[in-house]
Structures are given as C-alpha cells and as structure tokens.
Image 1 (tube, rainbow, N blue to C red):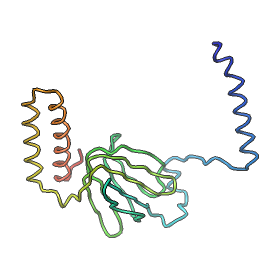
Image 2 (image 1 turned 90 degrees about the vertical axis):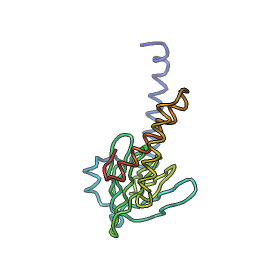
Image 3 (image 1 turned 180 degrees about the vertical axis):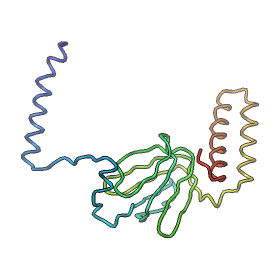
Image 4 (image 1 turned 120 degrees about the horizontal axis):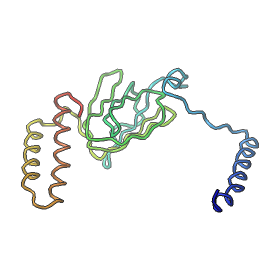
Length: 183
C-alpha cells in the first residue's frame, strides 16, 4: 500500500462512519434503484402516464404533456421510454422522435440534443432543432444531400470536408426518417 493510500485510509473510514451516522440521525433512507422490470411493476403514484417537456432553444414544444410512450434515436441506440422508466440521460442523434399518446402519434425529426428521464416519470427533451416529420420536403432533402456530397468530394480543406460530412449524416438521417426507417 502506498504512502498516499495509507494516509487516506483513516479519512475514508471517518467519512463512512459520519455518513452512516448522518443517515441514522435524520432517518432519511437512500432511494433504491430498480431494474426496468421492477420499475414497471412498481406503482407510479400518478396516472401511469409519462410527462414530457420538449424544448428547443427558441421554443417550448411541449410542457407537462401526458403521453403513453416516447421513442427516440440516441447515440447508444434506439430507445422507447414509458412511465416509471429507469432514470437515464441520453444524447440524441439525428433521427425521429415519436411521441405516442391516446390521441395518436406525432413524429418530429431532431438534429440532436439530450433526453433526461427523471425518477418521477418526467422526461425532459432538449433538442437543437426539431421539425414535424410531415413538414419536411423530401425533394429539398435529396437536393441538400446531393449538394453536401458534392462539397465533400470537391473539398480541398479538411474543415470543409468535415462540415460536409456532418451535413451528409444529417441528410441521410432525414431521408431514412422520411422513408420510415431508423438510421
């Protein structure tokens, strides 16, 4: 054991004793984390609905909106979120955000952002840009993709090539979303 480890050992033990004593004195218990299967079986204490807040830098799209499920494209993979989902933070990638409620499904294309699932069945979605999928012009997407591919192949500067590659990824995700496929 190194000198530093030996000198820190009493301090760590002291902290452990103090935290246990503090919990005992206050009577506050730490919340136990559950697996998704356990969370689904646990009572939500509410309506059994997922509460969604969906915001863009310039606009609030949804605020305290009750839904059944939200499907999204995250960097870690596609994800479906229901009420009582395990708390998580996901980085969104360009793709479809499908908000499913009793009234039906509303699909948005998001260029990226974050989704934060809280333990109280509240899902906060912060996106850089989002557009209803039905409002996107497929011909404009095809033209944009062709132009980005042209810029990428003609680029002599690495920064221009990288910017074009990002645009290509975005347009390809848009095309896949419009075709009903996830990318």
